Length: 118
Image (cartoon, rainbow, N blue to C red; front, side, top):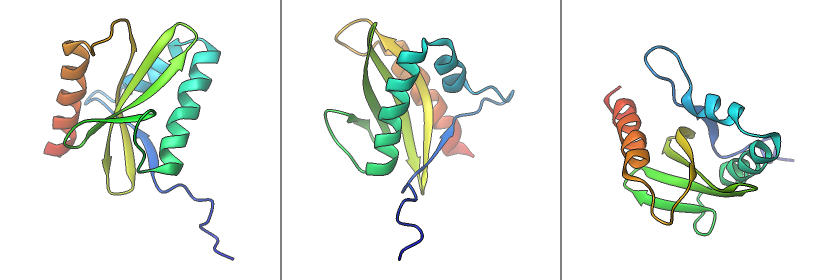
């Protein structure tokens, strides 16, 4: 029997700022339990099923994807990148309009650039 059969293909890690903060973890902690559970389940599905596509995962651009979650207050998005066997959660937010706000995308891109420079 393969002992790694239930091992996820990706290890989920939170992006860390230079000061050691984990913005996605902090954002998730601020959400109601029901929303945390929905987003966590979707991240876990991505982790175990990688690579996935729509409707759960959407590629934004090279090295940047989003997990698309439906929560009781609307829609949540978690931007992430994949490096080797790591799924790095870069930025999360509650979506209030049809189009992804530029500032949310810019935050994810900035964090991705920080990782790629390391």
